Length: 254
Image (cartoon, rainbow, N blue to C red; front, side, top):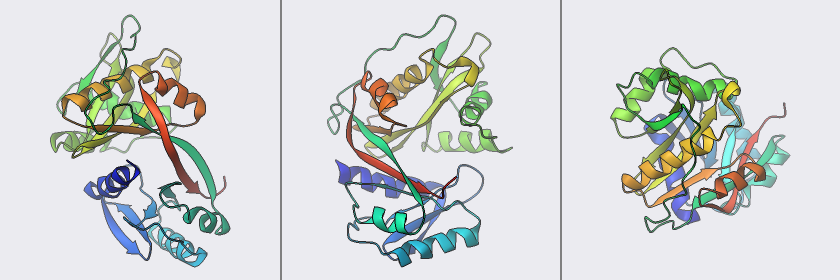
């Protein structure tokens, strides 16, 4: 299963980024606007990584003006963490979770109650709710979307690269939104964010449940996500997700 996710993690950024191979590491550099990417182990590489090799990637990231960020799975590339920490980056651990029944097209998740006056549904490329659904996760994480965020997301939806779900209020404005990004039989749930004023109402779980149902309807066999921490992981456990590993994210100290 971890190998399957590794193949996915190498493939999914390539639809919006160029890949620079730097020894045992691959640096993904976004083409156009949107969330910046990161460096990760080259596909299939599980050996040691030196501090010099990490420093080389960080120097290239600074040259390009992109964040000095690395993402990988602890169990798949155990030799990377020590080098990253010796290079001066801080490593954060996050539960890596897969929906039960993975690889079999089973495990539909569990039903989630939706607050009165809220509708949770898939949002299409020409949907009136697209603009607010594109902006909601940015607001949730304290960021500002680019001027082309909605148009870029619409293009990805039309290309079949992204599926978008949102929790909408009575006016059709998104209170929470998130995506899953299918590549073959695997898809990751990403970017689920709720507006600060709408939190603690279960909207994030409801949107995630809608994304799971859509992924299964699209024929996806393996649905996975990365939880913020163990508390959030327990919430996702209510939908049928279970922890199979540890996702690591490294960045400079605040």
